[in-house]
Length: 59
Length: 167
Image 1 (cartoon, helix red, strand yellow):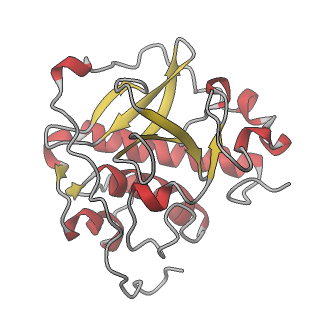
Image 2 (cartoon, chains in turn red, blue):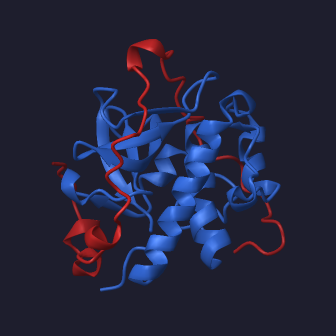
């Protein structure tokens, strides 16, 4: 579907067993919002926040 | 080859469950999750709000909401470092999300907890979290404006750029 240079996660055989295990993936009762009823996305902040000292316990 | 996160299959399943739990908690508390692009958008992580005990951020934008969801799975679940933005869980945006994790090539391989990035090219301008599939197509939770978060088909916008995995 998407072309991208480099490695793809789904080319990794490590993930082959995940599909069968991820049994809850297909959820018929998910209620979807009609995109026509929502405002246009305002977008992302567009920049990383200034570096900050991570709180204790973070990497 | 290890997974993106280095987690085992069983751990990845648990991690995805926590990510989806966080996204749906935000969705179910729509009136209390406000949209902002200011520094308060990181309050969910900074104040250690755990979806597992019903806590959620009161302010966020799309990327900080997606990052908070993944932080619930990766950090709170397994103590992992910031695989999403590479910023020690203190910041980031779609541009840093695009340079971390790995892209997913085929829709059929999309899993819960993967992120959909939108825009015409890097650095992107919106991101959502996959919470399931309907009819084989990913369903996402998106927090892109004050009335959100919303649950939508992944391609509710026509500028899907790529889908990335951090788990």
